[in-house]
Length: 301
Figure 1 (cartoon, one colour):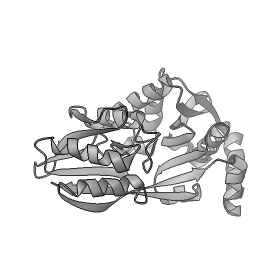
Figure 2: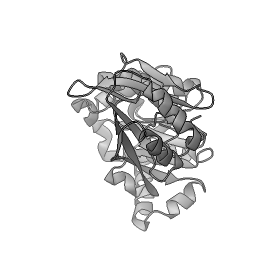
Figure 3: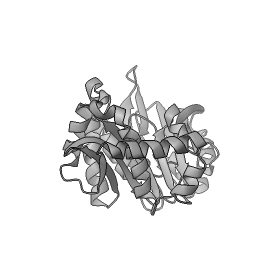
């Protein structure tokens, strides 16, 4: 149903992302499943807002990349969704993230929801996306001359220092290796990365899920027999979603981050047509071909 539903982020609306983030950050929140989960479905959860009022939202509790509505035929199925939604007791507001404003799903959803309350639109999240459909060389040709020069120079410089990247597709021991690398970098010092409790739980589950289904794509940078950096992501139906990248402070000056990105792109070239770099950040715009925006629909019952 994820693959058949238009107007959503198909990677982050899938179970690898939604189940894992729910496990990491909302483990005690019971999901509410609507639909037959064959023709259509919606996977929601009940939360409490800052004023302790009951709110329904998707099971991804933090970022809003995913969409909880899986409606392959939204013009017909949005009405069924609202009929079942109306029967759920004890909620005052509904928040649906991850919708593309130009999609049929968005238009059908707001039309159907307006029958039971007041509908508002809010800005969602922006993601950077690179087009790899023609392979690595056409993508690289679309970058600036300065980018291409730096790309080649940094690859040569990192390799000359003895850094190499080993690719990993098995989960065994991987998360512990990533944590050790993270603790030696700036993210680990500030607990901004995967070392926090919620993030560790999220990525342990996600790595296990991705590896079990042959979708894990990870690279470990090594120097002098030690792990010094990593890049982590997963593939699904031709889409690669970048998840985390980190490296030790001691090798920051060697361009290890750039080497991890470039080697991962080469590794993905044969079976990926889209590289989703995740949340929009200035440095990612040099790597992407498009910035995609989503919107949030808020219903006051």
